[in-house]
Image (cartoon, rainbow, N blue to C red; front, side):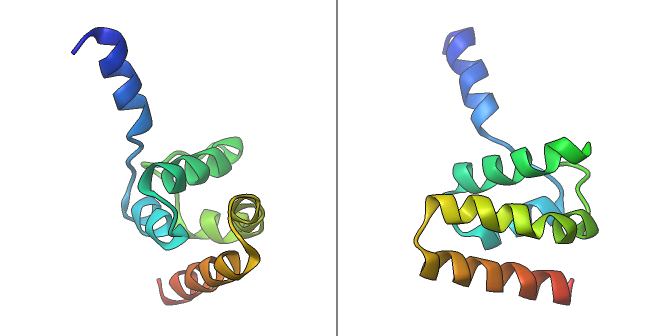
Length: 91
C-alpha cells in the first residue's frame, strides 16, 4: 500500500472514546458517515473524538439532529433523535 492510500484510509477511520463510539452507533448511519458527522459537530467547540463528553453531546444535540435530517427522511431522523435522547438520559 503506498503512502497516499494509507493516509487516505487512516483519515476515514475516525475512532473515539466510549461516548463518541456509542453516540456514533446511535446515529445509525453507516459507520464512516456517523463518525464523520459527529466529529465535525464537536470540532467547533474544541472537543475531539477521544475526549468528547456526554454533556457536550447533549448541548450539541440540536446540531446533530439538523445534520442527520439533511441526510435521511424525517421518520428515520425522528427515530435517531429518540435513540440519542434515550442514550443521554441513561448515561
